[in-house]
Image 1 (cartoon, protein in one colour):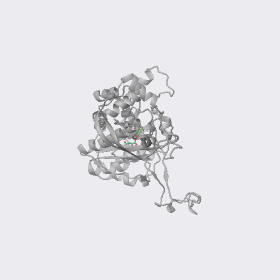
Image 2 (image 1 turned 135 degrees about the vertical axis):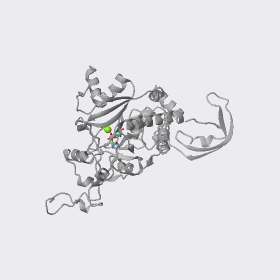
Image 3 (image 1 turned 45 degrees about the horizontal axis):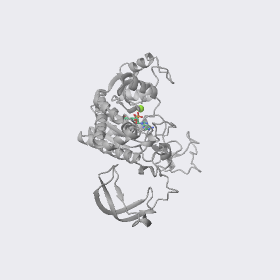
Image 4 (image 1 turned 90 degrees about the vertical axis):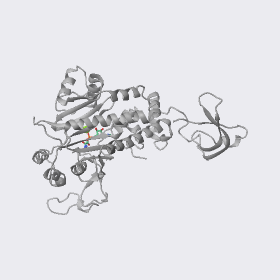
Length: 421
Ligand code: 4AD
Ligand code: MG
């Protein structure tokens, strides 16, 4: 973040200084001396200046300070050169490093799960198809009951495939062998949601642990988030101070606060009661059985409890098939961690370890069990209680950097209608 000042004799360097404009790249040789002027301790008195690369002031877009983030998004190939994106990208690196540190120190194994997959983990049906079929000449099944359907046996993998929405299902296989694993990789969602919190390509960290029940899962999630925030405060101080000053006054205070306080844990059902009793006018009505909207999550976190909240035991209808069913027959052992300014930062659950109950739920949802035979095998052979969660890496970075838009915490954001570079 810190710059060095170079002092050059305007007469001696008259010619070369003409090409020293904002954005140019130089090599300077000189003496490092105590500075005469204000604002810096030392400066370089140049004896040689070589210009490696000029940057024409007429066409180089980063001329002034204080460009808007919207403008910088249009020049994502150059924005890493700004102080802001330098800080964000350094923090991003530090958080990735800290994530591996955290798990490695605690006996978790990093498992690489596939990006090309045939299964839809979250069942949301918003996947990017992967195919090498000629889109101008798609083969069709010629006869039999499937007549007229696209003939995927002719596709690259001999079946239809897509980019993964989550590494969890394969992660569960790993946990049944290695005990505790985590994944950390890109995931893809073809939802058409144009919000400040959604990307079409984002990075997710998914730990999965044998013998963990929901409470252990919550403990891990809280400890993990606090470790990462503490790591940023310790190792990224200068960048955080810059972000606090430039973009989000109160950032460091907020990080300190989350570190110092217990997360509030409560049932979805209680959460809905609080929301209904709040007297607050929400854009979307809050009813038991509906998914919470970001405005509801933020009310609980920012106005009611004034701290992060872990909401558990959601209605089964709004959660995925693999979650452990509660005895009440209508809720599952899901957990969402809700953060100030972000809303949902983590989603996870205890998993249904009982083969019969899992199959019954898949039948209720009309899922294709034959295709999931490999997943069901975890429950057929030596099943074990287990749990896991997914942390959205960019949601974490929004919280840690204070950036309000998820497009500004990833080098090259992919969002609907935007994948130019
Ligand atoms: O809640 P989600 O969909 O959970 C899963 O995918 C589970 N398989 C995780 C698990 O239990 N192993 O996603 C997890 C997190 C969310 O809480 C959010 O932080 C982030 O991933 N996320 C997104 N981040 C950016 N853009 C999107 N479109 C996101 N969708 C989810
Ligand atoms: Mg979720």
